[in-house]
View 1 (cartoon, protein in one colour):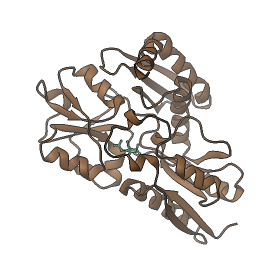
View 2: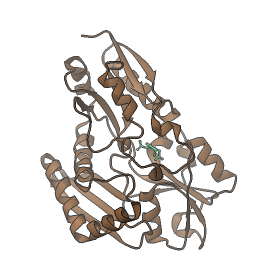
View 3: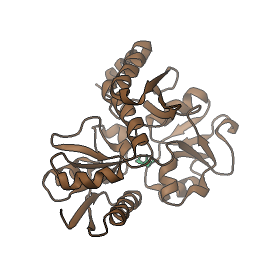
View 4: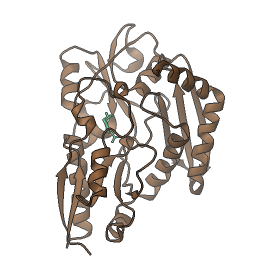
Length: 310
Ligand SMILES: NCc1[nH]cc(CCC(=O)O)c1CC(=O)O
């Protein structure tokens, strides 16, 4: 067994919180191990001025870290699950999926207004196509404006009056102890979260048996089951960051209720489908749900989006 283990991570506050959390979990479970962090800059970290949907490409926040893993520069990588592309490079696996934090999106208002209470024309900040189209679908009268930057920057832009409200993932706010800022939780009746939102992904080398022993202890069964279904959906849809897609799995009575959305960018068309799956059939049922969404109009939406890309 190795004595020293190196975790690769991005350098953002949230990424460092997540990597330090996994470091302390490993040290608690395996007191003989010493765990260090290595900060790796990714392409996504270097682009701060444009919505990432415009940059395109999958895995903007993970590629350089995966290279370090394949080169044995690090032993494991801690990512936000929702930053992970559908397919991993040859030789790498999802070693563990720890227990999920709150998976939902939230509204932070200037004041205390809920989404339903805003007046026509109110400015909502988000750069996520998934969030924008789901808001436009229920509130076509609101104005969606792009926003980027880290959590503090976004909250500062909100407080300065640039926006009436912004939408963020609950998980990041909770982890960085900013939960008190939240005005409204947008649960799955209002907005379906991104695939994997709120979960972490610990990526490892497929042939590293020492690390596998550690991963066993970090994995959370229910989270892995739900995320497996969500990611099977994502792979089948072949979702790029160009398209508003969402999928969320939740355990109810020993089954997983998977809900998925594909929407047009203006929110006028929105296909929402649900499927109840036994826990051991998530790969299959994630794919079946994707086919159902495609057949019910998702395919048409995706084709019109792809032709806009050209
Ligand atoms: N888009 C960037 C990103 N990637 C992961 C999180 C935190 C939430 C999570 O772990 O799912 C965030 C912030 C956000 O979307 O508000």
